[in-house]
Image 1 (cartoon, rainbow, N blue to C red):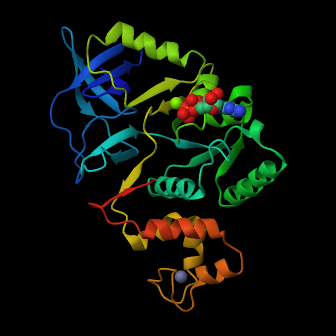
Image 2: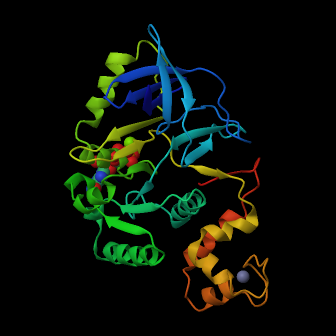
Image 3: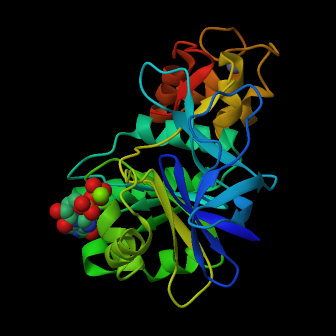
Length: 309
Ligand SMILES: Nc1nc2c(ncn2[C@@H]2O[C@H](COP(=O)(O)OP(=O)(O)O)[C@@H](O)[C@H]2O)c(=O)[nH]1
Ligand SMILES: [Mg+2]
Ligand SMILES: [Zn+2]
């Protein structure tokens, strides 16, 4: 039987087969990612083969992944945790006020997603709280990111003003991320009514005293195709194997400009004939984006792992 992993709680996985049946599964065999030590061989979003047994089913094979997103298992760990696999896009929920999401956080997220080739939708929540200055700031920041090719949505989760966002989620598997307090849960509840009840339902019927820390979970959108992957307690993701000289590849406007730099190995920090520095000087690229670029360049190469934020 083949199914999709919709929930990951430590060593257990909930797999849903095509006919909608749910199976509690353990992993049988040794699945390893090349060059990466991972705490979970299987992730939410994975398409897997399972063989049901008497009371436990086993995951026996993982189908090839289109992509996957990882984070460090813990601060000190060299191990990683796969947050999700086979995602079509990511939503980053941010707020300009209460709390203010800083642009470095946004840019690091965007750069990491770029490295994974995952499109990002920027969702500015709590627009109901913005005064005139706040609205101006929202226009400016939306113009900046839209200019770079990132879709921006201004929403208010508590007022359920979500129709354009809802449209953009149709037919896709979307990974949801955001700092705590930005309204991620409120937004998920508005998009998927009964999401908390759904979580409880799975727990009641299938979690028989097992370890229940949920790492990631996939929910179908109501009344349409498409799904959202929620990662409770996980702020974001990181990347492996980005060399400092590669960072510029993931800042779209910097990458485009770098073709006009005098030196092919320009780091865009001090070199003569640097097209990026010239553009910065002339205000053709945003100072905030350049600051984020510098901050990612300065990351320590920590076991080849680069935290997105
Ligand atoms: N004014 C306003 N408050 C919101 C909005 N969305 C969420 N909140 C509030 O922000 C707080 C944090 O929301 P929550 O969904 O728990 O954030 P999470 O930590 O990202 O999951 C709660 O008090 C929500 O009621 C919104 O659109 N407007
Ligand atoms: Mg929450
Ligand atoms: Zn340069």
